[in-house]
Length: 169
Image (cartoon, rainbow, N blue to C red):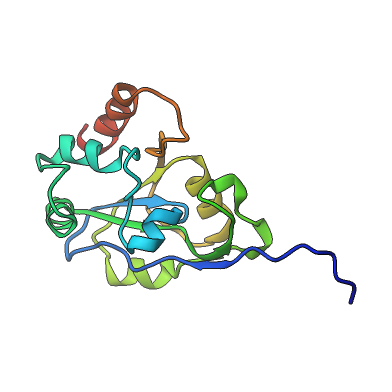
């Protein structure tokens, strides 16, 4: 074997879903970003609009402590998870995920454990693409929403309008 000087990207592992009994909607991201993985909390990058959008839609304080935001969201029947259980990636961008390294979460088990989920909302294009590519299940209908990531440059008002239509319309 020849040394090329290149080092493999680290293997990253996602974490457990946010879900309560009776959940009706599953919001799927692709893979938590660096900050979220460090904090072991979903959507912790300060410029990610996820908590601001969901707080607006479900009437809780986006600045509340993380456990309170989780309780408010799951109490509204919304579950949150990511498509990928593990992958190799440098940085936080979905475009940096090494395609051959992707392993999906166990959605067969998840949907068996949470049969009340009737709809999936994908937080961005990468989540939808990888779910459809990696998860070969008959599943609830899915809808792609604009990514809440700061890398997705749509205006907050446009993101909010699309999320409102999907989640409360």
